[in-house]
Amino acid sequence: MAQPVTTEKVDLNTCTASELMKEAGISIFTANDIVGFRKTHGKFSSVDDLKQVPKIANSVLDRIRPHVKV
Image (cartoon, rainbow, N blue to C red):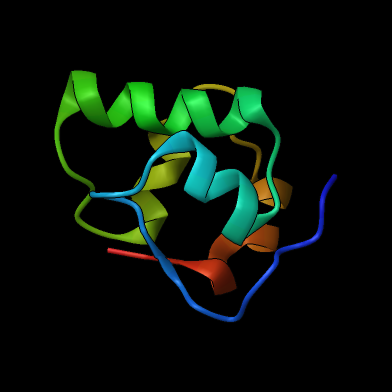
């Protein structure tokens, strides 16, 4: 996994997959899953809503939590 680039938090409701990859240090596959889920189901209410995204394990959520916001 890539390491996050900055300490700036990425907004889950407005970010692109590329921004998620760069700022949260996740793979293109995970980033696409998050953005695709948002497009299908609407905006996230909280970071914990990422638990609803298929293939997002708790370990992934714990790792990216400090780098994302809503």
